[in-house]
Image 1: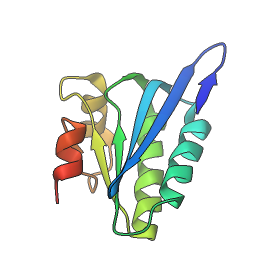
Image 2: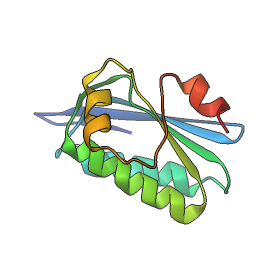
Image 3: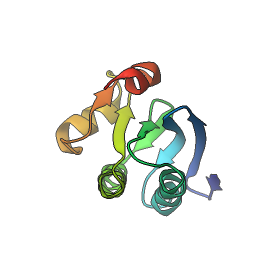
Image 4: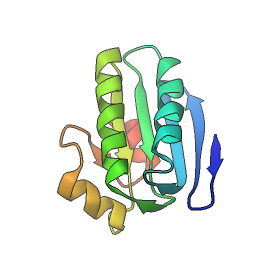
Length: 121
């Protein structure tokens, strides 16, 4: 899914393999792109049977606003209702990682790589 408006560019690429769905986000997660991001995640999550894993890879994201934190909370709630485990991947030195440490969901594990997130129990 790609959203391109005059202010924001956003794309999510789903990759499903084994017991994990990896959703790689690129571009900007803000007010203009939040709805598209939520829809992309919910489409991917609805296709998975429990107790599978949903990995949200935010490493390519160029801008992560407070709407991104709201997005992750909504995704965490959706995954919990469906019996899915959510994991987030961010570059530990990025502004996205700082935002998640300050205001992100505390019940969602954060990893440095997709590989680590998909291997973890």
